[in-house]
Image (cartoon, rainbow, N blue to C red; front, side, top):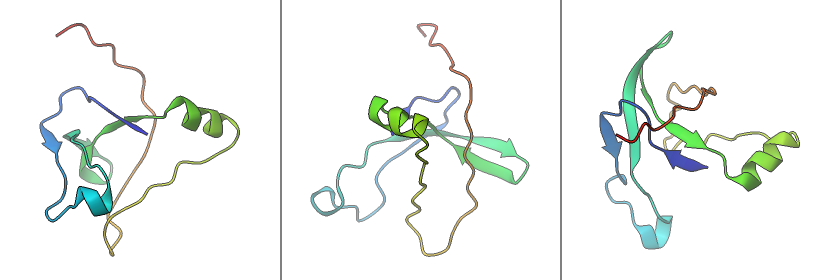
Length: 88
């Protein structure tokens, strides 16, 4: 999945403390914003499947969510329409 810029982002999350790229791999910035949901306030970010991932999804594949914690946090996933960049 590719990280996308999200309209109205208020924070760019970086690598967690003690992240070691040589052991854990690259960890780029994640633009995010706080959004009101039916479950309360949640951080929202935007992602885009690569062409290879989209092909797998169209063939019946699934999206897997990995959480770096031992206690499962509240999470949600959905699809939203494309927001065009107006050059700003």
